[in-house]
Image 1 (cartoon, rainbow, N blue to C red):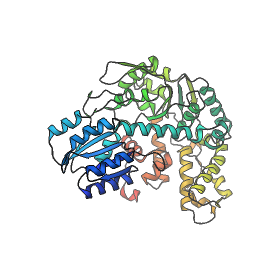
Image 2 (cartoon, rainbow, N blue to C red):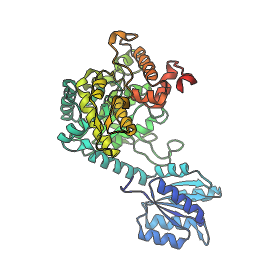
Image 3 (tube, rainbow, N blue to C red):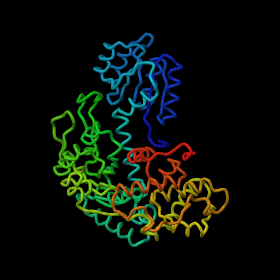
Length: 464
């Protein structure tokens, strides 16, 4: 969280080594921590500082931790308390939870256990959402339209200017859902943000959700929220994405990967703007706009019974397609200049120049990873550059742009083309899977899943 507001944590435990070690972890994890080994020290810290979370050992010399818990919840009702103990006394745990403790951990515990417990507290969630909202409001594209064009929306080609014009049109209709299509790495989320921050919803939350990154068992809870006790692990009420985005925008990335069972519920929520938390009966009205994105053909998904036609119609009120970078060559140079400026500033190499050969070579490259690949390429080149000029050797462009007729297939079949691009990226990266994933503009895990899906094997010799 840097210099921003941090969660303030007080650790009260009579073991000094324990408080020091835990405090050291919290500082490294970007929390602000205070240590107390006696009740007196803890009271002074509570008086002098606005503590958000108390980590309390229930067994302290000369005092019962539950008595401290009771007093704390009366004096500081908004403070979260996590109880810790080296003893598994369930009666004590039950009493602590009834007195208002948020969670219980038994010593010894792992650092990840305490961090997960903290990240479930309302204090953490409120601050996280507050910071996220501040970041959104202060981001490059939440400022003036001129800044958005010059700094976030880079391009001069007729195709990309048409995309921008469509985005501004969409922003003028804040209740209309928008579907953005285009290959991976073309900048679909950037367009979604431009629509949101140019609309009357700009002062409310823009929440980006990767539909394929949430486990299927948690999807309903994440979207609709849940009521405390509705299932194992639901230890507090939780708002879902639809509630969080009230008056704002919910951006659903990789919408084609959403499980079919959830699609009907998403459709109903989108139509009625009324949701019910898991385990609850009360209906909650919420006003949100959905912007969704995919690099797949949803019509094919409908034909294969993997995507609902009625949901497609609901999401596709306005449709914006972003052409791949290889189809708008005029944008390569301004994008390159933009990314060079970003990374020469970030890495403190202000005098770097770009040779003409770089521009000429990149114009002949087909960029399977699109704008994201170009950005990664520039970042890597500037990090590794030893001189004052970026040359063609600083860019991993090893092949000329391949004419369409040289492809293994000119079919529009998604599977065949995806298989072709993966094989091509692996070959270009000398079968280094991380580099191939960068070229494709996807995560290494996503590449591994696709390789398994298409039975693409890479030998040890190829990987080296």
